[in-house]
Each structure stands twice: as C-alpha cells, then as structure tokens.
Image (spheres, rainbow over the protein chains, first blue to last red):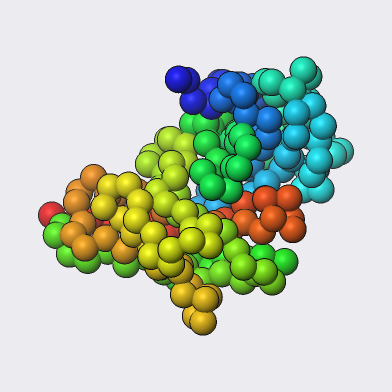
Length: 115
Length: 114
C-alpha cells in the first residue's frame, strides 16, 4: 500500500512567485493535515480537513496561503505570493478512524526554498 | 493549551550506550503521546505511542518510553544505540479536546559515535 504521497519533493522559487504543493493521502483516510516545519523546529499545523471540510485553519496565514481538498481525497496547498520566510518543509499527513490509536502517517514532505 | 518541551536539542552517545531523550508535556487532560523519528530529507515515522493503556510503551527499532503522570514526562529510551539510530526525534502530544491536533516539541538530534 502506498503511503502519503507528496509532490514535488523540492521546489526553489523566487520571492513573490506562486507555488503549489500536492498531497495524496492513504486511501480511506478521511482526515488530512498540512504541517509546516521550519529549520530546527518541530512541525506546526497549518490546516486540518475532515473529508472536504477544513475544520481547523486557525494557523493558516490566509492572506497568502490557501488550501483545498476537493472530493475529500487529495489536497493542494498554495502560497501566493511567496516570501523569504516561507522557506520550510511542508508536510502532509493523513489518518483514519481511531487515528489516535495509530498516529498519523506523514508524507516525505516538500522542501521549499524561496530566494 | 498543550505544549511539549524536549530537553536537549542535541544528544551524543557512543555506539552501544544507553539512549535517553527527554520529553515533558503540558496538557489539561490525560494526553495521548507520541514519539516520531525523522531521517534526513524524509518525513516523520511513528516510533511509539501512549494512549492511556500500559504506561511502558514499546515501539519499533528497540525503543521504548514510559508515561509518568506525576512528572508529566514521556522520555524515550533504548538500551544500546546503533549507528542507524542517528536521526532527529520528535515528541508530540495530542488532546482530543483540540481536534486531535498534534503539538510537537522542537526535536532532539541524536548523534551516535563509533
């Protein structure tokens, strides 16, 4: 079974340019998370989806960040325009029923560098 | 609000020595606790979890952790370090009252010396 798939693995863009990240969760997992991990820090939640609904986006910088999960399967996270401080690893995770008994499953992440 | 403190951003041990990575949490209700490992340029892999069952939890790769409510701790140990254990380790807490959001510590980089 494939795990959580993210693409691209790496992305380098100039500041003020747009960028998008894609995540395909584990089949059947209703809950999808986007986390941001800054260098030398632990991941921080950006947004959580239950199926198609964003149930927690309190940490998402809504002036430049947007996310969608159409059809409740894969998801896209977008930044427009990107700033230097957005350089980080963006991690996607998914979980199914009883996720606290199993923990989340994380993807390999997208490492974004804004120059 | 929940929080996690990992004491020591870097820990260095010799191969074959005891590994001890410290984690203290803050939570208003009995928490669920996790340890994840992250190898360079990879995502997070679950090592073990505490979900209010046995206080001594065994995980993969020979790691284990003990939940101590009185000390609000969940330290990660391994009796004998291997070179392959070199990675970054994250402790995380989850509270069902906060939508099962995982709150992570800042991480501890484990270095294993030969």
